[in-house]
Image 1 (tube, rainbow, N blue to C red):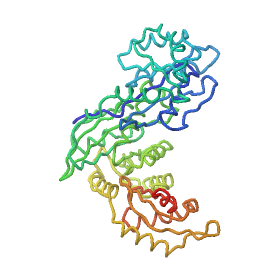
Image 2 (cartoon, rainbow, N blue to C red; image 1 turned 90 degrees about the vertical axis):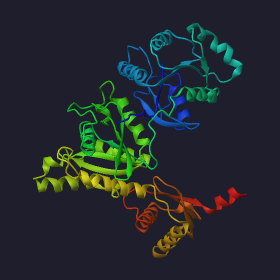
Image 3 (cartoon, one colour; image 1 turned 30 degrees about the horizontal axis):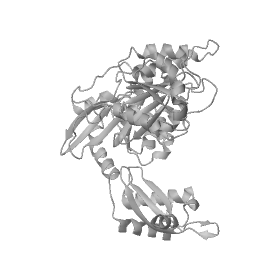
Image 4 (spheres, rainbow, N blue to C red; image 1 turned 30 degrees about the vertical axis):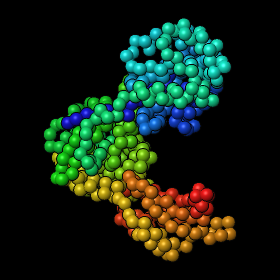
Length: 450
């Protein structure tokens, strides 16, 4: 068994209203973090996977560190930020250049000096070099070797900061060397659903720490497996709990590391507890898998508990089908990590899913498929014109991605897109994986060539 690290976690901390959410949005190129001048808007942590100059990491936006006794949420926000400091790989501490140095800043700096982790001390709201010297002056009282001048709103100093941050990120070549063609398979699910036990059963030996205590797997652990002529990297992850239940100290960062593992796997295996049935959180975990565009296999574990109850078995499978109408392509297996029931079917299914997940197709076959689909079901009228589909081509794999050139991508109704998606699935034999269709105007391509 070999262990490898997941994506490093970078935590943004600081007092309320110093610009953490604005900086978060700029780094992630999104508007996911709420930006509001009212202190305490960011009550909990927000996170996003970021890739900058080929370096990947997870950025976490935290609530502000404050001691306002009138705010009942202050302690919760402080606990969240303290946890971020403790569990992150790198900390970015943000201060307000316009408001100046405050006693609360001093307190946080004292706390950060006790950590051995890299800390970036940022002075925000410095909008240009003409005010930098004046606004930075008082912050030198902190005795910090390097202060980073930035403007989260206007991007001053942003590239310099990101280059410095990427240089400080742990090297991503520290993991084990994988044989060519290794299929990366990550196991996900709620705590205590049997992920580690399942891997133990598959391996035939206790390579994972298995315990009845929920939350044993605090980080993702990798195991390189050879089965027949193929190699697999099995990734055992921490349990993903419902957000409101993740109050234990390390739980939320375990979730982040699980999601980081999802970003680097080919096939996600999501375990569901047959005894409890499918839950809302199970569907959310599967939603994460779809968001990442991974191959998906659903295992209904603990089938031994209902092996003699046919009605209960039928009810469970009907319940799973109703809860997952949006992933009808995903194979669903009934298994038992205790008895080994159904385990032998897993490797063939993983192989089938991965082959489809990484499949490529000749352009001629794709265009023939598109032409037949359009002839069988004419496209709708859009702005008094019949939609036309000129040609298609594969533009990516993992999952398979196709671009379809049309005279108006805005006129492609969801129902017709679904129709074409189903025809591509059927015609290409992609019945076990998600596929992505992108529609693009042919006129835009002519403009690009000019």
